[in-house]
Image (tube, rainbow over all chains, first blue to last red; front, side, top):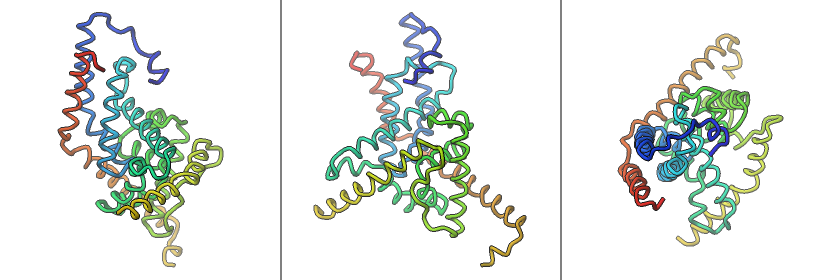
Length: 223
Length: 58
């Protein structure tokens, strides 16, 4: 999947028996990591059903790409990378659909997700839903997932310094929200020189609110 | 506001303790999901992946 992973892979065992054993081992490893995939997916989507779909898609993708995984490297980080890419590509696809594509609109994580966070969880979890995706994922990976800044940067495909600043800003925002000194922060606060953030901020401004709103209206008019 | 009258050190300590609480809470939320039993459809999926592979369908 990632070029660096493919290059780092040692020469694969040519015997079919070795391949079968590798596959069995890979599957056992996948099985063991399912709980963490679900937890990360839930933290991205908020909504359990969407999150489990995402985690399952990730498993299928990982299985199909298993020959590209370099044994002995961090499988959890590799899987999280796939999951995260899938999350954003699902979302981009949903954005490109016509606003009245109900099914696609419902799949947009965030709109339904935030409600779910808010409904079942504590103040902290609720405040988490107010963060931008980048801040939230960085904080979850480092603060809850136990990843190093370096691994989190690899998963998020950004610089280590970017992860550090996202985590710092996420913590600061959470505290401000929880202390009630700030009402809900803007969905994305682009940092200076942070191109990815800026692009995402633009996307946020352009697409989802209208799309979500259109979906809600349509849902209402049909129901 | 009362908060603004707090000395800086006290304020810093309050923030630190708040951050620790947030860290604990984050881990709790994440661990709660991670500790849920794996739903059957995940197990079925892994099983199916295998069968599809053996039959060359994947």
